[in-house]
Image (cartoon, rainbow, N blue to C red; front, side, top):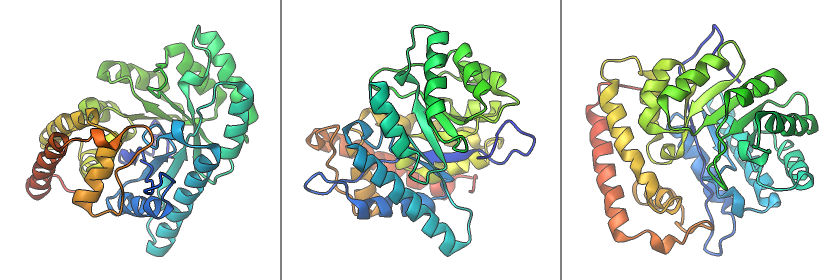
Length: 319
């Protein structure tokens, strides 16, 4: 994985937090998984974060988590082979268990899916002190294949464990980490984190649209978040043109549009992709009741779509 802190820096990258399509019987819809991977690819995404909270991983069996990860990896590589374009980087988590024994079992399984990196949840370790957290992290790392790149995710569920400076230092000292999905939603804090990570191989991705432009200019590796399930191409435009004088207009739209995260998600994303992008997805979900996605919420998404289409036509920024 590319080091955003190294001398050879490429444009910031976009990683959607992949949703999981389900059939009418609420089984995983693997044809829908393929369609979604293809849609991310078509819209210029550099990678995918699969089997994460957006994927409803807390509501997936270990067998399903492994199967989804393998399917995403397989389809992404098929697309790359048929096009000659560099493949999307696929990172996966599935790290949801409470006990060490269960965590060891699930991480061993997820490490064999062929993904480019395995993402650990920061809230799976004892957060009572930096030392206790680092001890848990190092023990977990010791279970995993030494050649597998790792990442960290400040997952909001079941509670958000933000990374302290000591935790970041412990992460860097292992030499194993390449990816952080930052959910602190604080541009100044992200700036301090980037300074701490400078010179390491760890790329920090911002999950928060409202602070994205600020943090891209500070040196973050890109965007890894929910709203790339709605208009990933606009995030690609911003990441490729963040130093442009015109970037603030697009940033302002993305910041406001991202409040759609507060709707009935991920059902809202599935509805959006079906209604406006033509993907063969049902809106049913395991983590939320899709019936809570009201006509009022759908009208908000429709209005967001109108402005989104206007921006695509009029924005000076091109991807």
